[in-house]
Amino acid sequence: MASRRCLRALTQTTPFLFRNASSLRSLTVPPFSHANSSPPVFNRPASAFAQWPHLRYFSSDKQEDRSDEDDISEEEDEEEEEDYDDDDYVSGSSGKKVYTAEEQEEEAAAIGYRVVGPLAKDDAVFKPYEPVFAVVQIGSHQFKVSNGDSIFTERLKFCEVNDKLILSKVLLVGSASQTVVGRPIVPDAAVHAVVEEHALDAKVIIFKKKRRKNYRRTKGHRQELTKLRITDIQGIEKPQNILAEKPSKPAKKEQEKVAVTA
Image (cartoon, rainbow, N blue to C red; front, side):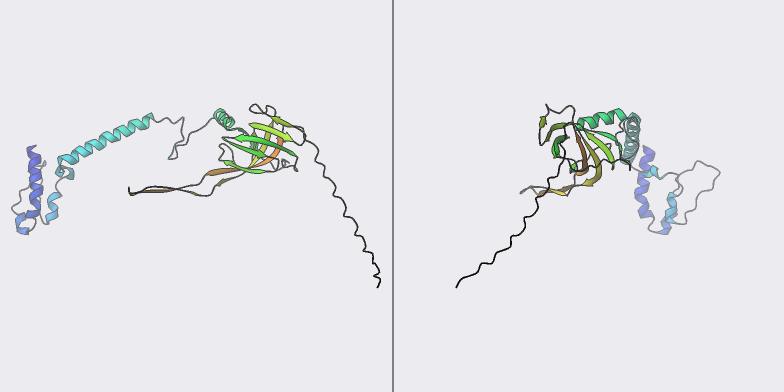
């Protein structure tokens, strides 16, 4: 402690000693470990600190305490990194969870769909319009659809563009001749769809204010959406789509000229 106080007093007096070059001669140099080495020559005021191998000796006690705290915090961070489980998360800054194939199927089934596979060029999934409709549930939303319709849902996981899906939560199926209502779902019904696009919805501004409190917060949000194209509805008898022939236009009757008698 005595040597540290002497060093502190030396650092406080050095600015006054370095004002004049003549004052450097009266400055006493602390003893060095090497006895054979010649004493240093002070040519410049800044060279007085060049003999000390580490400048941290001139630091105060508070700075040393902070360095000790930093070392402890670094050790704690290393321990937390050791506890970090690499099996559940992807390495990197994203930190996204890695799902197995079974977990993907379970979570997709909970939402209400199943991924079949990518759409091939030879697949003729798009059919002409059929007079059949269905009510499907995807997540917490319900949609009334027919084949050929396009719907926007919340972003669906584990599927990419041009993937074929089967929507399994069918609540109702109907046609011109019959209607089947599920309790809560129709067991043998299914709706086939194709992922067309992953897009973003329009921006929504979220503004909060508390009057007389100088409190204002403005945030924006764009919901991630998935565009689905309905290709087929199964689970009900489909009536034949017969186009009724349009009646021919009646021939225009020639207006008979009536002679006007005077």
